[in-house]
Image (cartoon, rainbow, N blue to C red; front, side):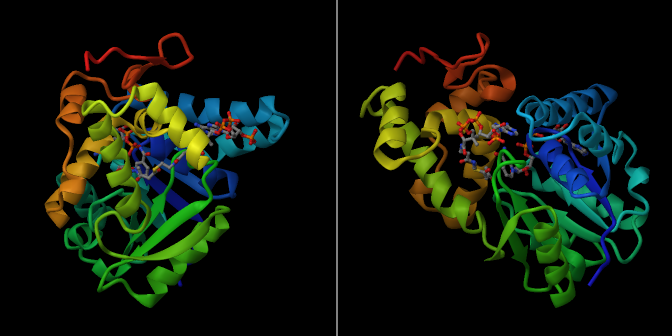
Length: 295
Ligand code: CAA
Ligand code: NAD
């Protein structure tokens, strides 16, 4: 099993920032790469905001917060990943970008370094084949928000070595998560079930089943969901949800995974959810206000 002490994280967006936070909180030296100084600063701010929540609630001392931040280095240089023991990629849900990143890292990182993907729906083998170390490529799929959700899906491909899989399971536990083992199929376990539910909610809205707020309220009060499907879609990111739907539909060719036209229209309009300030709800006032989609 690879001894993990230094962690690399690719991407410091919604997920990368959370992954970096939990790794540093667990004591790992954590190097995070983003593509521009501006996005490095945005990522840093996201991590500081999340830690700030815990400090405000008295769940974290300012000293511990500072120690966690002290273990995180943010950079735009891929070369700074040169001596990490594991890299977790959390870049945009785009196979070409993920393959290009892992292929470049293959030349930079030592042979021992494990490559892990936080992808929602791509298959890990399609990334592993971009490297010279397919046996050391694995899926480590965190859930949003990373500091809160305890599940991690650990995905082995048909060529992932036992040692790599066991290292990934041990690593997931070391950052305070509860791992489940998944096969390398699009959507693994949760998204295989959750994405069709979220897409069906959009189809139900478009077909006039109920108002968006009533559908959200119905699933919260009727099924005990912490968030209804539209608030959840805004939380995940409608751009990410659309990419995930396209990938899963391409894999399974089943209508339940087909991206609804309304989701495409909204994403094209830049309605990406909470991350862009507007999705099914408008977040500019802080509290979510339903957007009139003219349905
Ligand atoms: N980052 C860090 N911490 C957060 C947070 C965030 N974005 N949002 C809330 N929290 C923390 C709060 O600080 C609070 O911490 P304490 O318990 O220590 O006080 C705790 O979470 C609860 O938060 P709140 O009381 O403010 O609000 P809540 O009770 O409504 O919980 C929530 C917020 C945890 C996000 C909850 O609404 C929830 O669980 N929603 C469902 C999330 C979900 O389904 N995630 C999976 C999405 S699918 C996915 O991730 C896979 C994929 O590939 C797309
Ligand atoms: P995001 O858009 O918030 O962040 C993606 C980040 O990747 C952006 O900040 C972007 O600048 C950065 N990026 C793009 N190309 C890069 C590169 N070459 N090098 C470094 N950084 C690069 O997206 P997200 O929601 O954090 O999703 C990231 C990954 O995690 C996706 O694969 C997604 O499917 C998966 N995921 C998302 C969620 C969710 O709820 N959003 C949950 C689990 C897994």
